[in-house]
Length: 219
Image (cartoon, rainbow, N blue to C red):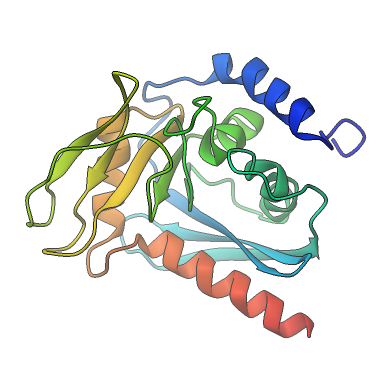
């Protein structure tokens, strides 16, 4: 992959345009048992990419992997996946368990070219994937109810690209979008199930902790 990985914004956009047609927006495969959270932490050009696999029913940790390295692609809005995907793929390869679902701290279809990080990882791995982001990148939504489970469609250019989801009463919503091989209703269901106590899914919280820990350990 490294020999053909894009090095310029123009090359990266061309990859997104080519690959976005491969995204599947329907549920594929069995009900997820092992769900993986993925996240990357940065310290200048240094990075640590983490994957933490949880049992979906118990939310107990099953396996973890972390990869340290350096960024090889500049920060460009809309092209963030090109900074993170190589290290995240390396972390996934270290697992002995193949996750049934990837939960990315980022966007899926809720992206200007409908090909965010969750789409990219899903298409490259063939594993169902969803994006669960802290903020919107594109799209707007109507005000949603304050109770846990309230949702509102995220609309961009007249197209539904995701959903704002209230995971806890009165807290800011999480922005959920399809990555690959998952329907939007199923993606929303996963996020609510994975966030029983806090705003963010347990997968995201675990991966965030591990990648930050990975950066500290390298110092």
